[in-house]
Image (cartoon, rainbow, N blue to C red; front, side, top):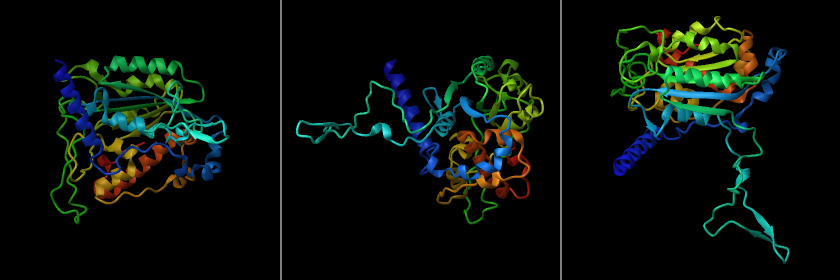
Length: 359
């Protein structure tokens, strides 16, 4: 029994590492102050701060797909989101410890193996950075379990905090794992035709929910937008990666007290040539490693750039976005959402509607 269990663990780990490293440089980007030019645009959105400035303190991350890439209870999608919601360490906690010797010289206490003393008896944290938001990962939850977790976390939110809810799930009970990415065998020199599109099967049921449950049908496993509306008594930042994500637009203007910020995936995922299906959600990939996702979509070498000046100087910026832009993690997700939408718009110039995410 132990042999079979360890064999399964190794198989899961091998599949996970292959999927996560399928594209060079695909690691989800942590937040790094060196690449954030937001401070120069602070005055542009100061008009929204008369009420308050919201900060990301809590996040709930969950995914539910059959046969999804995972290692134990950590799925590829939640792993990418987990990494994208933390600070890039500066390494200050890894500074080698040196002590003063009898002759007045400093001795390096790093061991012969080259390991650095990081004081394992104390918490490994970087004093030069703010604390990471608390992140709760829920593996294959039931709807009732997810509701219970959200209720508990919302009760503990402070007035200046916002809760991020990330859900990656199928919209159909009989759908086989993830959004399907079609692979193209044609040359990349034909940008419009080279990216074939997987048309979704005609819906045999309703498209107003996402599915959290094992194989089979049943209302208790359906997560509806109305299920999340009670939590809008608190500030929410909702990210849905599903072919039925657009159903959650119903939350807008139905909030019970606080306007919710919504990032919703396209209903149809664009094809990534040469990428096997099941290697994580395309929308999640754009939010966590946007340039890598774009380069994988287009078959080019990645290069990082910034787009936040366009966002922060927008005249028509809604107040809910202005209030959450000061939070670095949420701001980065918004910028990546804009980048994702722009890229998909130009990949589908004639039929953008169902291929575009909305907010």
